Length: 354
Image: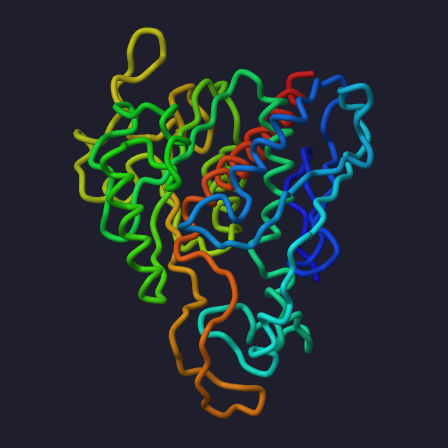
């Protein structure tokens, strides 16, 4: 299986299966001498871990990271940073009913067609548990990018949207509720809706908005390696993501150029920021903001029609512990992937200027 590594200079390779002994990763290319706060890394993992509230999967994992290499006396050594996160609460029996059937809208069928074998226990590598390793790497990248702030939040669940621009939101409120929405009134509606959907044995999707501030001018390349293209690739690599837009996004397609152009101030900043902080594939120093769309979780606690290994139509129903809405737990994953992209381009630009 190829495609387990992300990044060019700042690289993360992940390994492990959902119901294996551990998840883990190797971070390569991190400069030496960076002070790493392990508590901050663990804090990021705590934001992603299962069982943290009544609206997410009740799988209980401490997600305690164990660093194996690359750190000495609290600082990076410049060598590969190896780490593992043990799996502690697997219930493989919950998946015995899908051993010979394929869950609709899951990777089950294509995995078996491509590789001739699949790990049906939790989905193996296709499980969103793989993202735990990304969060570790992203937490390291955030500490490399000390001046850059990255704030993601749930901006919609189903048809419930925040009706305020991100500039009017207080990001310190994002962690004040289980939905990770910085608008209290909207968060309450979202939480109630997720609970209602869960009672029905159903699932719901939503969107996450991410805002990056203090990104230096000049990150990104103008042709194939555009900054927004790499951010899009990073976000679309996350389980359940179905869409990515930055700046004005699809709304910009409805506008005239006279409405859409970001006019300059004398200091090089712009009066508006419909470009989303990126022009010509290169960061311009303004806020970078984008939105990521997540589909509803495919495993339902309802009976659905599917096929088995013999190609026969059968009925199946989800069992075990699953998220009714994956979006709240995906907030730190979106931040992590954004940090990995910016860290990679930051190191490239630093190399170009040497």
